[in-house]
Image (spheres, chains in turn green, purple):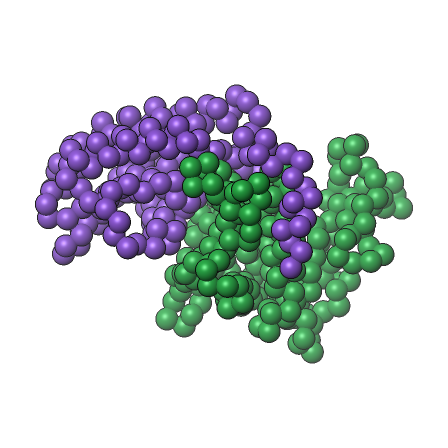
Length: 225
Length: 163
């Protein structure tokens, strides 16, 4: 739920990083924290276990610049990835404006990715939110690992596309981030589908972290415009 | 099912009315500071003594704390716990729900008592509820204020991300 505060001239938005345990959600936030200027970010808060696994959430506020004289302040949250923390995960999704799904590219984590994606859809729909109508991007992390699955396979499993029912959106929309690919297109069977924008990343050294953040924050602001 | 979450905005008038109301409350209870936080953890305003708090972090943790307690209430068969009280050696916190949208956080010390805060907070919440309802009914009735603010700002948004 974005909030505009005319008194402090701020637009506040909430972005949640979701995905399976040990996929790199916290690493994304740590990289952002380390790279943005200290005056444009707040403290990185981690409610974690003694072994540094996220227990409730990580939180990082960042200012991404000014629009129409209003400071755009993004509150970045991660959720605990482990399956049994669903109650906490669901709480963090409340009033979210944009979602980043951080998938683990390792072939043996495919099952965990699928389970987490299904859990995301379920939790969102329990709040009455339709993920397909919201700012939503997918990040395939750990692309540097030798056991990383090919992007085609990850896309087919995690981002196969959803049917576009609104006829006014039935036109081919190129993916601005991948030449030759489309975000909205018609399948040979005649059905129109839309996919979430996706990014490849190696969060541990920062590759793809800001591309992902930029894409989701831009979608959030454009959803307001 | 809605596409996403609703958006809302505070004008200068809302802000002034809320601030005045909270200042009266702080004076009447001898409390140190009041923060108004939305349920997603965003700070709306803070009134009273500047305690050197990181208010952004404080707001987020308050909302998380309250949400977790809300779920605990449901687990024991209550629809919610309408307030929370954390007692410290010097400083204490009282957190109360406002219109199921916001949280009022009162920070106080030994110059007052939890009894007085609890007694006065009921009237304060009624007053704030009226003010907050005004904010939300405006969001429901007209075009989203956020939409008006950012209408036609696509170019500016694109430029913001040229880094």
